[in-house]
Image (cartoon, rainbow, N blue to C red; front, side):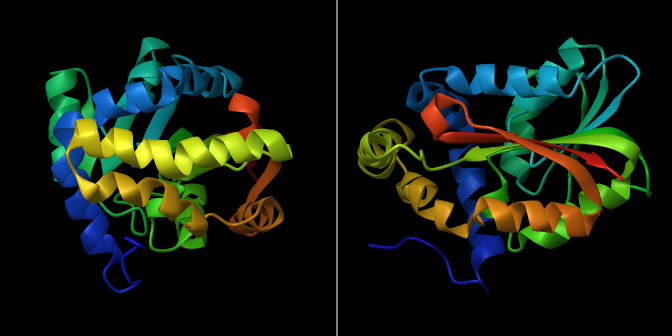
Amino acid sequence: MSVLPSPEEKATSVRAMFDRIAPRYDRVNRLMTFNADQRWRRDLVRRLDVGPADRVLDLACGTGDFAEHCRNRAAETIGLDFSRGMLLAADERTPGLGLWVQGDALRLPFADASFTVAVSGFALRNFTAIEPVLHELARVLKPGGRLGLLEVDRPRNALVRMGHGVYFDRVVPRIGGWIGRDPAYRYLPQSAVYLPPQPEMVAMLMRAGFRRVQKKRPMFGAIQAVTAVRS
């Protein structure tokens, strides 16, 4: 049974969902990915060569995983999320460490060319529209600024894809429902339908003003790690 909200209800529904699951979000994520989600983030931050000279936007920051990895590399980092519950969890996790902003990815509350790097983890499918968000990211990045996106994907190998489908579509909702105690975890595998195929995603990035789009596929292709550079 589908748990995907209607387009008109998506923003409100997804915000409420993340507010509810925020206290258990990290625990469930670590278990579902066998803690590999942290490695994927670290690898992407390393590929972007984040350092002390950078000002980083962690878009849809959740509890602040990406922000923490960027700050560990001495970069000034701002985390933005539309879920107040997630931001409260981020602040509780690292009190006094950084700046958290509640806002809408479609209307970022930042001036043009405010950042040198932008990252976002497992958030694309939660936006009501992806391409306008990419345009907003391009707007707030300086020319030459780097973008890193982490998302789910479907393995190309048929055998791996079959095993991944069983885990992602059947096991993950059960784990989330058991530990997270919330039907929201049935949304996770179903929400992958919102993600565009690779050629369309590349075209979106190019239209938004990005170039040098590159994609790596960790976890046997079950994850996509995309980087691009602002023109």
